[in-house]
Length: 377
Image 1 (cartoon, rainbow, N blue to C red):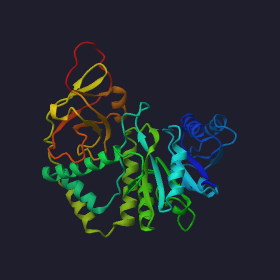
Image 2: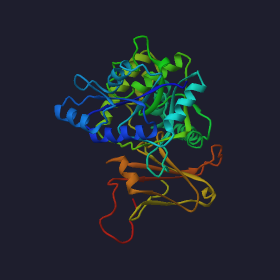
Image 3: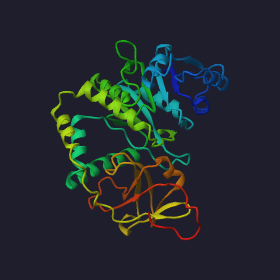
Image 4: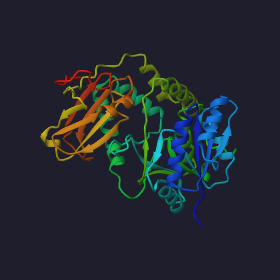
């Protein structure tokens, strides 16, 4: 008998999006147990949610907006399933995803969690990045990289190589140091002593990092299954920043409060960041999006990356070949009202030449109103 699974989704005033995500889950795995927790604290939203979801879906009404982690805990406690598939409202599963993840957990008892390969778009071209486990040393290195060009280049090289290994993985699950809670399947063995999946002190963000650290300390591994695929329509929304900072504060206070590297990172934050100093080609706006010329040495295989971060530590990536690389406005709109930092480089992980094309695109990330020749951005 295979492992049983319960899909867990948390709603906050987005019933139509949750209904679409649930439909995606059921289309991929008909008959799977599904539990939806409503944090909306709104009678009309609760009624709408119940009307949009199939009767077989278990709906739980939280006592107010209790946050993502506690919402997941509520659903997990109500289920006896072997595994829990956490699915964000903006996630859509590609056929076969659930089964591949379950098989992977069944075949490797050393795994505590596994995630699908995730794409930003329905065409399955723009790949989302690997997750990273926050540490005090990494926080310090990041602050130095924002101020010291040699450190910046080393950080970019290391994170870029990690992303390429992740994006180019094939067939067998690829071990990871951390996984995102947006689309991840967790085995029951990952629950804590109280039967919770997440530390209830986290409202939203960094609860998944805390879980990953707990798994590592339990000796349980994590992996990404390349053949399991999902579309995750991530967006760089302004309201996320404050929530992320609050989650980070809880995480670092819990795990690194007395770490000297964290104190060094905090001291560096008092020093203004240095200039970017690396924009060597402007992106060319067209009616469809942006376009970059690909240097001849890269044309046999390149990766185009888009990031909200000047260090390009967290990028979405598109693998391609040829003399032109482009990104549509539909893709750029995921970055909201922020600057998009662009990097074009070789798709070879062991590339030693380090040829890169850097660009920067200021908002708005929408098609020009006037027709005619494009303007540089």
